[in-house]
Length: 374
Image (cartoon, rainbow, N blue to C red):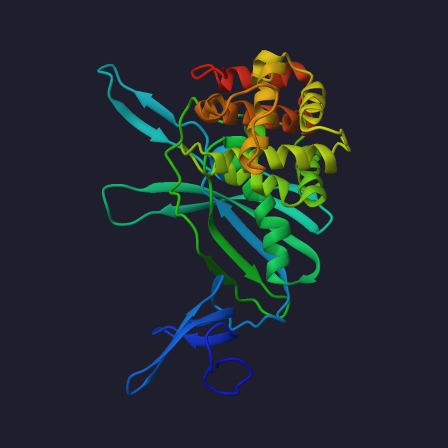
């Protein structure tokens, strides 16, 4: 089915909905897809590109959904509640293990009441027992939202999946992506798996040193912190998503990244903290005061904040740098300036989530111990 059953798309650029089936009979849908090109060589062909492919249901743009389940590459390591107990074993006199047992018990589900609905973070378990020399138990972690009312898939994705992803990028301070997304309509028991374009990130093997800025177990009040994060995300959208995008750039430090970062800081200050100062420098100083940390922890000395403001003036407005900095100084310090701006945003968001100034300082010092902020 293409569009409202009016026939083949006549021109590129038009939006269509495409329904189909895979070779094994699974329903497929492309909603609000664009006709990129059409060609005619004896037979008609159309190249179609859409923001998301749905497997399992032939939905349309008017379809409403009640549940969405997402999993990111870093989610389970961030909240390492597996339900696996340490193994119990017996060793004989020769040091050989003669008995080993382990158990798994479903951990309690963490629930948070949000404006859009109820968030449930729940571990799952997959066991492989077969006629083989090895058996295995693997756990995963999913974030489920049950909406108060059926809404569009775009709203579920933008108001739930993206805030979860942004939180995980912030907490891990490294790139992350949604590795699994599924939605369920009120009128169906069949999940629709949602496939979106984007960079693939493979979940890494867990590391004892974590290397996270903080984990879910560090939060002083898990429910209050998650609520606060969703409130900030909604009130300042797309600030937190843009901040997460800068971290998702990984080891690429560029004027573009710095520009997005400064814009995020400025908008966050104005829209969340109601900091309406006449200059960017004054807004940055107000954020530093809110974090209530020594300037050296984030590199937010007055001189460095002036350099940050001058960098934005230079790259965003294409003007001569202010505060007495030469263009060469701006260009040669993009890397250091970006790291300082990131640390300032991290400090403020840690305070927003309920961490005291003392604890936030310890988290930042531990996180940057091997690579101090200049």
